[in-house]
Length: 154
Ligand SMILES: CC(C)(COP(=O)(O)OP(=O)(O)OC[C@H]1O[C@@H](n2cnc3c(N)ncnc32)[C@H](O)[C@@H]1OP(=O)(O)O)[C@@H](O)C(=O)NCCC(=O)NCCS
Image (cartoon, rainbow, N blue to C red; front, side, top):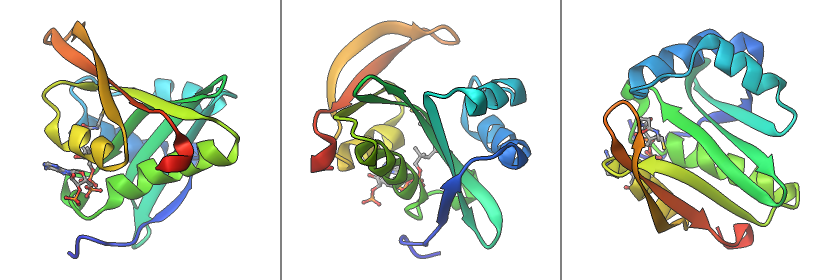
């Protein structure tokens, strides 16, 4: 499939949760549960999006509005749909939503060994700015803290 496969990006609803849980299980060493996703959808500070191609949910992304900061909480693309530009479209949709809401900057944490995600975030203008040592309990992996200081520059 071409690198620039166009996905439809739309707000996540409860109906998307089973597909999103499946993507989480295939993507995240500590996957979010159905209940966690349900409570995220009820969180007034949270915004979640799904990507679909050919009517199938292939990825999701979300962020929290924290004063004037967008905290990216999660992003994942189904393994068979990766490397087609869908992760980029999802994170861009979240950043555009945050900018439209008047937020100023964005931040996230990522596993130090997660080269695909770090590369994606750097392409979107995020810079590595701190390390949280042994942050992830499952394997004591470091977290890299990244910031996009000006949402308008992305
Ligand atoms: C990280 C992830 C969301 C990227 O999604 P994707 O749809 O495959 O990414 P895209 O096709 O939009 O790629 C955008 C950029 O990401 C980077 N990238 C994506 N996959 C990569 C890989 N395997 N190796 C290195 N860089 C990669 C590249 O910089 C790419 O830019 P390019 O197209 O100019 O080369 C996906 O790999 C994933 O779901 N991983 C598991 C979950 C995860 O780690 N989430 C991040 C939690 S912080």
